[in-house]
Length: 270
Image (cartoon, rainbow, N blue to C red; front, side, top):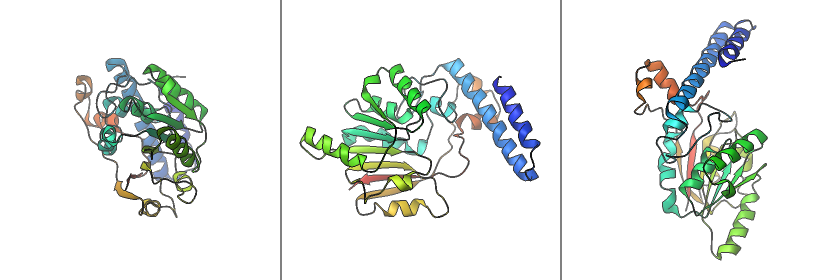
């Protein structure tokens, strides 16, 4: 079944459901937006190839089918643009290791491995499909041997990595932890279990009823300088065929499929 048929069947199920009318409309709008976004991403890959065109990971070869989300913002180089400065500054931080928790298909794991050729990269994801795609992405970029893929992250793992690197380097290591794990950050980022003070942290926060970005940040106020950042939607210079499409298609080309606000905490070790 093709993408059009899948989308049409999904919309039909929504419209035939017992949901209130407004929920039907909201879910239908989102389903159709994702359908159109996927078409735009597939056309972009076919027209321009799967090389990331801009941003901190410019030049990275990407997968035509990521494990989640739309591909167009990543190929255009505007994905999670509010974080770009943090990654562009990473080479100056002299990181010895990058820990990527919730790596998905490897945008940050592989991107950081390319950006920081001397750093060790550890990547975790509980989804076996995501881990396989991350390995494929690493191989596509010729760095398959540099990505250490693991399944389940626990807070004490930062202690183990710290101990191993300290013994090897004979000094205090410097590390970057990038985390996007759909709400599990509130359980995993526990300073009472793991020593995070040696790491810079970039964390996507998924707030819940009793869980806020502010509360998570408070755990690290004594060890880190903290910024809270919100998503940005910026339409860059687009390929000509995309420039010739309507404004809605141009917006969908940079849409990251976010259903609710998910702020980031950028926390730099003191």
